[in-house]
Length: 125
Image (cartoon, rainbow, N blue to C red; front, side, top):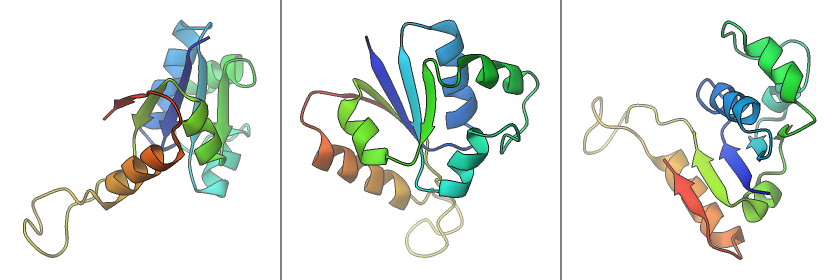
């Protein structure tokens, strides 16, 4: 079984992975985030974001092949494919301030993937 992990349970990661889980029931999908309240919301009946039809999709897949967790390193190390959907706010200082994306969170995720991986991974930006 292919395992997918998505780092980031926000507006991109959560809905995208829910649809992948729905359309690909043979794939195990884990959405991970360091925010325990956000993960708790994804595991509740009150999702942290609204998209039409998302509630039904999550309820149909959650606990079967769609999982929400704060065990980031565990799921990253087990995954075959890793999606990185972390925040990239606009830089507030330095070169490109006010225009360029701040890739601090992305770089942190990439370094963690490299640190915990013991097998080959496909990383999707």
